[in-house]
Image (tube, rainbow, N blue to C red; front, side, top):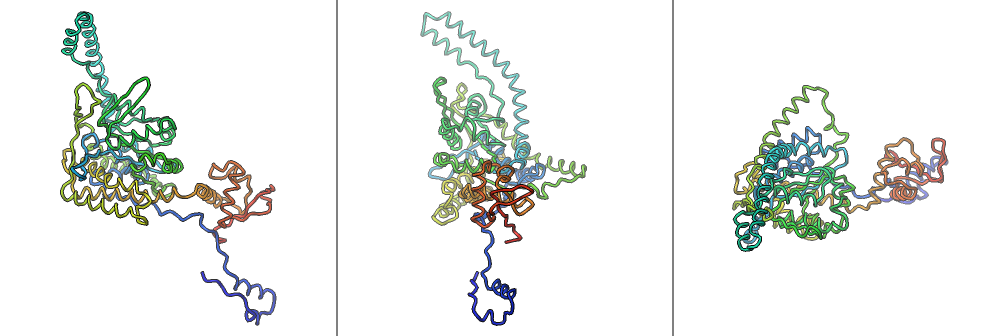
Length: 530
């Protein structure tokens, strides 16, 4: 904006009275600058690349988003996490690095949404094939456990008899016990995706007693992030095991009473759904970053649907029934594909020691897919340079190509559980999804860089603009205002000072408001007055 020139005598040459003089001064005075933004506004959430999910997952995600009335990215992350659970127990993918490096099809997702955005509903739809399969396993487990108890008792009886009979002949006892063989292994626990108040300690125990492919799907991950597993004394060990699970490395638990437990070839899919405040704490935690856990997550923070037309349901019951029937058809192939993969035989490396791990098939990239991978990886490397798009998310970007291959493996097996290669077209779709998450990582990193005091002041400003009246007192702010973190006079005063510095409010020398005198008060400068 160009500054107006100072008044000269010529400006008043033809002015006759005081009113006209005042108007001349007003015309010549510089325009008053309105309230300044508290911080640079973040870019809007990008549109989720729904078509990249392929012919099985695309209609499933669209149906869940429609039925749950949730953001597409939320439904997509829930569906992909379940698909990861199903596929990771079937095969690994082969990265075209050196002589080839196996990488699990395990993917970690973090979805950031406010309370009330239907996160649990979306997860419920996505998890249906898993819950149905768990119920079936539980029914079978009951009969298997009874049969196992009989065999185990018989083995114990035979073992005791041999000890009694041959206790004086060590060599004969060892030979007899060798012929008897080890005790029968108990049936596998039926849990695949533990629910409720989760801990990694509990997940490790399920790995010991259950199937080698599990998922931690937390629709309210605040209890996990703030729970026992990640308390200060346990955080380092839990974070390390979460990183090892993503890598496909062995998992370890060391306890003074229980000794050392080591598990091989375990696979873990992870989806944490959190509110923005919890996500900000998690994403800004230095220890998680230093141990490499944050870099392993694919992030999404879709826009809220609260108050939008997407939440307006038809009152026509027949139409709702037709929509539900359509959603069931769209989910049918997804449910079948997930269960087909979950039913893949478990090929234990040892008949007597499940801790030794399992045999998994390998998905190789076709020649065209290998070339595409190299191009994508090189482009990411160039984008890590200072000032380039991925400069602020180097750790995340360093795993982007590998995550794309994992996603491609999942899409491949969901489409064909007998597939042995990843085609270039499927990898291209997976890269599109990975790039969406890269954009989200950059956007959320920008958000994490905003000072908490500015975020709090912004929330207060939004609340102030919902109120009637142009004046407000300090006590009203900290007693009834938003956010609720403004619970003291000092915190409310500090937030109003921030708004004052940016021209959104003007401090008054006391004010009478609704019949009550406030020693500390402010005038709210609304948009119309800017």
